[in-house]
Image (cartoon, rainbow, N blue to C red):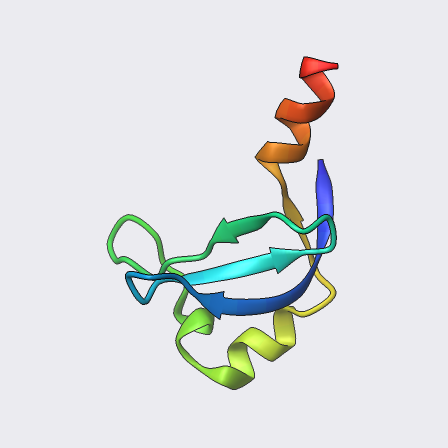
Length: 66
């Protein structure tokens, strides 16, 4: 399910997590060569992504469980 990004925070291992409008979080690691997300490494890059949509697997799981 697509949800809007409302913020970002660092988890306990200092990995960036996108906070979604539903309250769930999605890791947005920049971990080359597997994941190329250079935008997450700067404040400006993260700010550009505010309001964009990301897939929330937890919302999908909750919907499928009901």
